[in-house]
Image 1: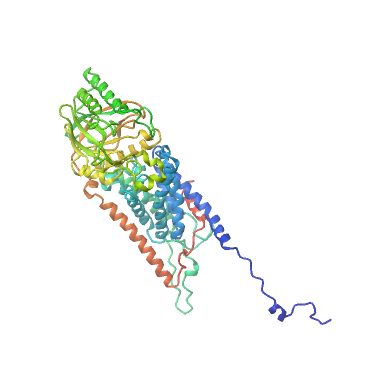
Image 2: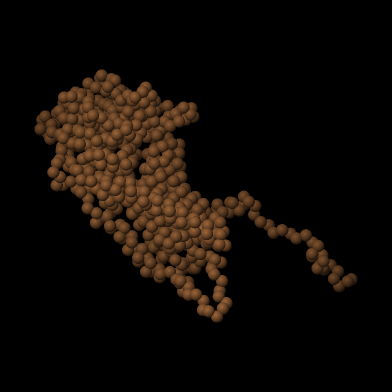
Length: 604
């Protein structure tokens, strides 16, 4: 037998077809990527829920800082696409819990609005991922939070400002900053504190690619995302000495500086003077009437004139107490939004019932009612000054009706597929001027319900001469759901922002008297008839926030967007220069390093 019989020859090996290596299919690779991202997605969802707990009715405001910090950590060093998904995983659970009060309308409505609002967090997550490679990224992070809220406050259909970081900090050390730059400056400060907390966690954590405790000459800089060693310059083969390697500041020193920045951001608010109205030259006495409703929820109105009769009867009982000396006579009385469930100018019985109650108390009364609009397809949500001698006079029409609640966009098309929209029989017609009116001795600034969430509506009212803010609201649909507490928190921030007392009149609660420093002097419980009396300051001064208007919001938002543009331009230059591959970060931090960084920030 030949020596090589039965043994493969070189020629036979060359002739034999090569067996291809088994590689996962396209779906397999995609599923692997999805599984790899599940832990980070779960952490983002948990962080979003944590942020929701910072808002009323939970009121755990420090969680607004840690929630913002968690999003910064989870997006740091990621691609824009990965950051976008992390933003959605963070935002959707956040809005689901925050807007839990919308369940009374329907779970589909709640989920739909939460999904729509979460899309703004998609853009924020992508922006945070892109700018995390820049130096001083905590600053750009805070600016991008302001930009996200700027867009969400205006888009679509006039925007929906619920869930702003500022609205979780209406009784925190950040609150006084509202007097300087309004709600946007409060959001900026909270987001900056969160980003600095994330920076501190990164600095105290292990350097990327090393195990905790590994000796290292230097540490990776927290000012930019980690850089792969493949991107480093080749070693110098000449006689000249190799260039010195630049090392980042020691972690301890950087962490101390970041900690000092956090402390300064949190405590700077205490340096801002906030008016209290304690020494106001002018005051007036007010009575706020909460008549209550029979059945909270979508059908709170009950039979015709029931809500009106509740408020008229409560006013007459209060008038009897005044006549008997059991209560002090007020200068004005304030009724809530929709306190008359019938149009007093079209239904004589409603007009007479209001007029009798106002004559009984004997002072000008602000009445909330729905009246006919300019045509048969519209109504107007009005606050009407009703004088005991002259009857109805000046009035304010709500400027910002709520989409799908007070008017139906694309009614002809949507009503065919969403039958619940037919409950909105006529669209609310928007007003064209602010709510500054003379009510007895007080020049009030009236805003109605959700309008308190919109910066420009309240600011215009104060700048046009309103000496006290009045919020007429009807929260009967959302009673005992947390929504009235969220709206109360917004009113507290407005008091500080504009240096005005705020009077909240609600059909079923929460009605309240808020001092110019944001403190709640008195409030009602929900779903009970009640009356609040107080002596309230009438103030004329304007805060810095009133004077600068929306300028801080625009400056911070544009700064954040420019930072995004700079980061994108820098990435394009690197790719053209042969650096990183398009769409892929130089080196992505594994999830374990994010967890290590977060653990390092927790005191032991």
